[in-house]
Amino acid sequence: MKELVEKIRKIFSDEKLELLIGYTKGTLPLRSTPGLIESADEADKLIFDFTCCNNLAKYLVDEKKRSGNTHRIGIIAKGCDARAVVQLVMEGQFERENVVIIGVPCKGVIDPSKLRKKLNGKEIIKFKVNRDKITLFGKNFELELNKNELFSDSCLSCRYPNAVQYDYFIGEPSEPLGVRDEYASVDEFEQKLPEKRWTYFEKEYSRCIRCYACRNACPMCYCEECFVDRSTPQWIGKGNDLSDTIIFHIVRVLHTAGRCVDCGACAAACPLNIDIRMLGKRIEKEVIERFGFTPGLDFETEPAMATFKENDKEEFIM
Amino acid sequence: MKDEFKPRIIGFLCNWCSYAGADLAGTSRLQYPPSLLPIRVMCSSRVDPLFVISAFLRGADAVLIAGCHPGDCHYQEGNYYARRRFACVRKVFETLGMESDRLRLSWISASEGPRFANVITEYTEKIKKMGPNPAKKNIFL
Image (cartoon, rainbow over all chains, first blue to last red; front, side, top):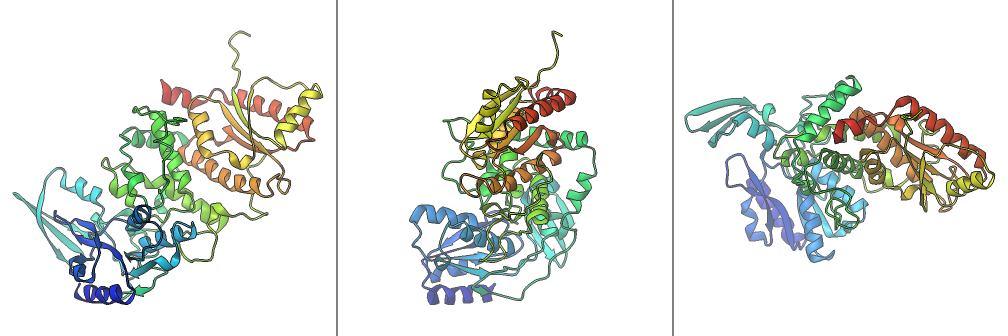
């Protein structure tokens, strides 16, 4: 942590940053909170560990909306944050020169919704980490867990734990966790009968209360006005009609098709632990297979949906 | 028959090719089933997936998007983008366990009036065989 703070202080003055987006300690155990640092002196507030689950690229877009495109902003980036930044730059959201990507090695982060599920309403007061094990202490209970049990699903199958594109890198690059094959869950799901798949999604989505936390946490959802909020035309109603909910989820996935970096921020933000990633993951696979594009890897390749090839497959056209 | 199923197909037709194709079918007095509800858009890439999904989940039995043949787009490359987008929409339908055959993308040029009539006839027959949109039953009631 000391190394991080010192290096960031130096970067802050070297790069003449006006703002740095990082993580600071949260008020609850096992939680961190995104922090905006405005001067090098404040840098000792910064932390980075396995509790840092937010995707900070989101705050970069918010900051740009607030103050225009002229600020020089630094961002502490895990693999997924850095990929989101690259994708946002490719989409012309801000200039490459105005953002300084500070890569940090990520060894997986906690998914708050998994933690919630494990705790089942109980509160933790403190925790202890011992290699791969983590022990949670609360009032009258003690729970020993494998770290992997709490890590986000997207971390367990993550391919890019370190920033692919960066200006600075602090620490030693880490290896992917590789607990799960990236598309194993998707492939397994596809084997099911269509009716079973529909029942599954119906069950998941019918629980949705449309709080739009998944949209708000997503770095790729930066529209000035989201289609669900529009009143002219009103695309979807405000009630909890299932067809409205399904329209929201499908269109959210299609809007992020070929852009989603699978940071898992949506799943982590969901208060009802809905399986939001499954559909998006399938489309991600489709985009890779069909168009050979993985978002956020470099500053040269055009995003999949913003370009085309004349000989794209069109076996579905009749 | 009184209660025969008449499919409702929402058609997004591109202004420059498919809508003109439909026009030609009309002026040539070609017969095709009255199941299509045409909506004129300026280009097949104007069709937001949202339109398709909304139409489908609000009760359309099928959605047809028709545009210029690749290379013939009035805006040079619009239909290529539409093709990419549509591939994803189809995949979403498949993954959700909905029938992706209820979505169709076809290239119909301005001179293909007979083809337009054929496409509508053939597609209507197909949807008739498939029956009403199950989403109606599953979601609305």
